[in-house]
Length: 297
Image (tube, rainbow, N blue to C red; front, side, top):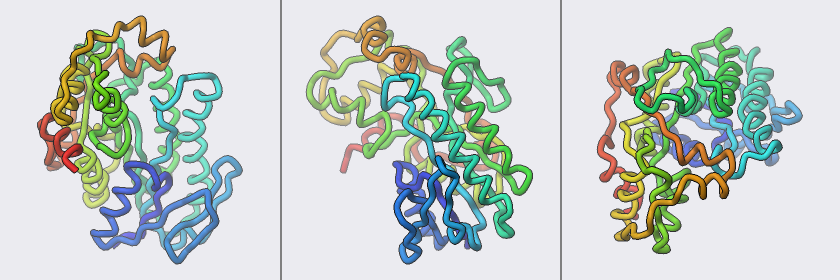
C-alpha cells in the first residue's frame, strides 16, 4: 500500500480520487490552505509563499498534483491569465522545492490538459508526441508539464492530459446543463467542434492505473470524441429536455466570452491508443450512456 499526498485534493477529481484510493487501502493525505490537522490527514501549504508543512511529506511514496484554476471559469483578463499559469506552475515549483529531498518518494503524478496542441487542424487526431501549439492554452500546458518534469531527476513522472470530464458534480457538464434545465439550451457556434471526453469514473481509474502499473510519461485520458451539438443533445436527452433555440452564433459567443470563446468554439481530437496499449479498458465508451449515468442520481 502507498502513502499518497494530493495537492488540489478538494476539487472534482481530487475528492473522488482520494475516496477511491482510500477504498483501495492506501493512506491518503491532502494539502490545504487551512491549518494542519494530521488526525484527518490534512496539512497546510501556501504555494505563493513556498510554505509546506514538512510533516505532510513524511513517508510519502506518491505525490499527486491536481492543482489548477478552472480554464473556462472566468474571462481571460490579464490577472486571470496569470492565475491560470501560477496555479499550475508555482504550485508544482513549491512541491518540488519541498519534495526533492524526500527519501521515500517514488512516483509523481500530474494532471495536464488535452487542449495543448492548438486548434489549427481539426481534422487531425493528436498523439502524445505531437508538438505543443502556440496559443495560450498550449503555452500554459507546456510550462505546467515542464515544471512537472523537474521531478524526473528523482522519480518516474506521469502526466495525464485530461479531456472534458463527464460528471454531474463539476466541470463543463453542469455548466452546459444549467440553461438546458431552464429551457434555454443551445448548440454553440457550428456545433461541429470536436470534444474529447472521459467519464469521471474512468478518469479516476486512469490515475490509479498509471500508479499501479508504474507508468511514466504522457498519456491522453479520453474515452472517445463527440462534437458540441451531440454533447448538448445528449445532456438534453438525459434531462428530458429539448433543444429548441437556434444555434448561438460564434460572434455572440466572442462578444460574451472574449478570448475565452475559443474553449467552446474550437475543438480538437486526441488519440487514446497509447493508454489502451498498456491494457487499460474504459468502462464508459458510449457518450449517451456516460451522460445518462451522471444525471441519474
